[in-house]
Image (cartoon, rainbow, N blue to C red):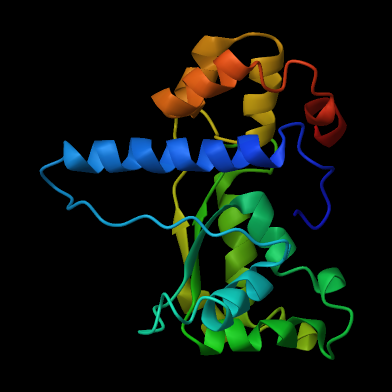
Length: 207
């Protein structure tokens, strides 16, 4: 469940299948790599829309599977981190961003892939957002400067920015070359064979 986007055009069973195929593709890549060891991949399902709540669920409902209480690193795009630190999503807290205290206090973090210059401003503009946190500009809303140490920024792919909206739009117009550049081979094959997103108007709504 997403906090603000319309429901996906793909059914729940299809989305779960996509995650399983993606995990399989990752494992196959690691198996053929000399630089990385194969690691177990778990797929968790939750209806909680916020990352802080997702992590809390892993720590409570998932305690049986993760007794060592590992730290969580959420892989997100730049647009997601702006929502993560948006006060409007935490109206029950005073100050709003104090809602993030348990998340960062537990040692959890974010790995943020920046977008290429364009839709979300320049790469430097995007880096400046995290510098606002680091410099204390978010303290009045409850954001703590030390949290910036738990936010890792990753330079964008110089060829193209990866986004789910872009994938849906490409699939809708049958541009399988672009879908293949944005997805793993197994995911590409499933989206194409199942004709996912061909009747999806969500990409246009979210653009």
